[in-house]
Image (cartoon, rainbow, N blue to C red; front, side):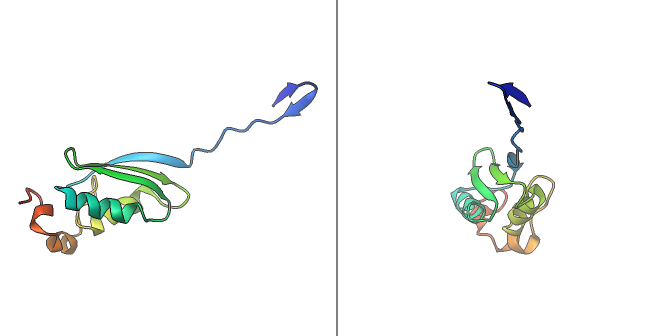
Length: 105
């Protein structure tokens, strides 16, 4: 609380509910990028998702009140890609085109 011109004003720190996280994936190509970004950028609670194919790093900005990091990793896994320690869903991985599989061609 501060006093200003005889008025008392309460100041509250803004809650930091919007966070940015970087997730290591096994994405291989532009098709992977479109698939991952397309799904995440239209998921409730996610403000922004961008995959750098060269480094395989996924940057996600999200609202912790609406979605968790674990839920985001589960979505990436359900698409057929590893997300840090969360391994890709086997059926989804097997359904990926060859260019999207590890070592893609």
